[in-house]
Amino acid sequence: MAEKFKALTEKHIGFIGNQHIFFVGTAASEGFVNVSPKGMDSFRVVNNSKVAWLNLTGSGNETAAHILENNRMTIMFCSFDKQPLILRLYGHVKIIHPRDKDWPSQVKLFPEYTGARQIFELNLELVQTSCGYAVPFYELVGERPTLRKWADNRGRKGVEEYWQEKNTKSLDGKDTGIIETV
Image (cartoon, rainbow, N blue to C red; front, side, top):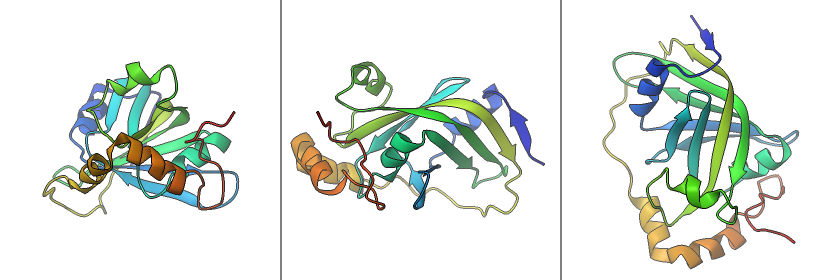
């Protein structure tokens, strides 16, 4: 039932464009494995072998900590409507922070978000589809405005202060790289 591809096909790209949620999986060499749901308008197909997603400020920063130690990532999309399908993207990732020279050109791929924290560029090594027959039906009611409102109320300076308070270490105590050290 599963099929493997070296790169995204037009059909895969169309499927991704219709999804409102994706899941990101990462792990360091030791400690907790992290799986995070992502939404909002934060995912882009750059080309058939590269994707990027904008990471927005949240209560943790596990993905960034894991990538500093082990730059492997899996992104999973799954259909919750008519046609069942699971699409997984496997590869190695590069982190782009607001302080990096690539940030201004890369952040233009996305809407403006006060809480923009990092961009993760995933170079694809394997694309896999599977049936998704056991995935239940769900209907999208709408996007939650809560995260955007939270960041907008704090302002960019307040968001960056939050990074200092809550986003510098992972659950395992690993550095996340959010604050540049000299």
